Image 1 (cartoon, helix red, strand yellow):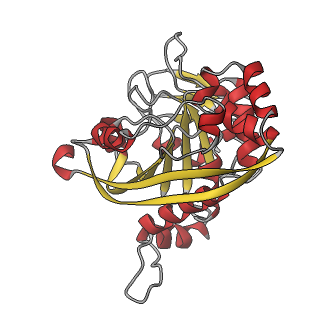
Image 2 (spheres, one colour):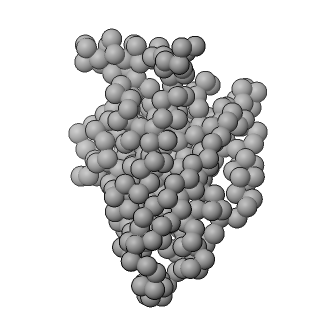
Length: 309
């Protein structure tokens, strides 16, 4: 809920802090932002709608596909990476409790929460952030996405998640140094803003598809492919602000029927470029249930202290 994260949000107009009212967030200078009945708030200023915002159909496809658990191993890997970033293993292989969690657990008995903050930039429906929060009982999550259709669903994804419409290419409506972990799963990257909102000892986790992702569908359905330079472009987008601390590869097979194939295509960038009727005809020619490869790279970055000053 927004109440869990409002102290970390700032006014997109003047940069002052925001306070939670009955139906709006307000800053001391009088700028107000209505809270939608679904529980999210838009901190996106201006009348121009970004062209990359996911449509209602894309969000529905994503919700159906992720809800069926097809990317379950990825969601588990993201959640585990967050726990590792916050609670490194000690010499015996046991995960330590963070100082902030100890404080949160002690204060929680008095009705006060002071746990970690997980920020998901390009959160979509909040699927991955909700999985992370399931494993971090004293953490709160901020879901940012430019699509109000996606954020409506994110607002219901977890009780400790605050959902905000925002554009990653603009200054993020988040206080500097607020986030302990910043997630970026299949979303654009704004290196300067990510470094600003992340704590000095925080961690950025970036997930991108590899060139093998969705084999053999890419060729059979004439989908957009991931080029071999994707890894280099990710590093370049963050250079000067972050240093890669490690990475891992994750691949697993998925058994998809025709409806799932249509959903996985409809939720991604190919949805903007493939004619729906032509796609259905090609899908009808596939086996009723086929094996499709999911292939991802997960990279962990740490802020450059020199770049942050």
